[in-house]
Image (tube, rainbow, N blue to C red; front, side, top):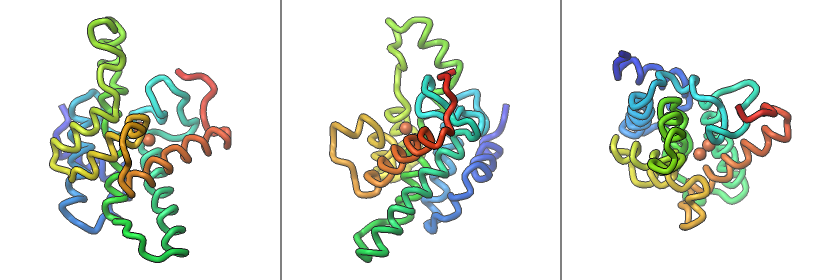
Length: 196
Ligand SMILES: [Fe+2]
Ligand SMILES: [Fe+2]
């Protein structure tokens, strides 16, 4: 079985943008969140998770969850760049924005795990399908490793779950970057036709 230390090293290689986070504690917690999330599944690297929004939605022709996370993190910072160029400081926390974007899908190893998928599909009446979506499971991961509540909020409310509440400023950028990522990649013919 792969060690936590090997998982952490893999996360660092998969997500080089983690190095953009200036606060050392936050940087370590982001690595820990992904290493812990992977450790609960059969995945050992983020690149092993298919590059799609859900386990049954079209995946990237050329790319995995790692590229998705990196793309969303850079798009979110691109939006921040644009806003700040025109309006100056509007109160965005760049470190937090990196952490929120890089962790928004930290629950995906659990939701995409073939083991869990098979278990849930075998008895949907007993488990529900999926039993726990990646957004909800991502909150569990974030809080378990001690990430700030604001990062758990982004994991939990970047997607449809966030329609029930008001998103934070950083999570608003992550949500829009995530949506822009999938819509742009679809329009650029970068998604597979079949849903696998
Ligand atoms: Fe998501
Ligand atoms: Fe996403």
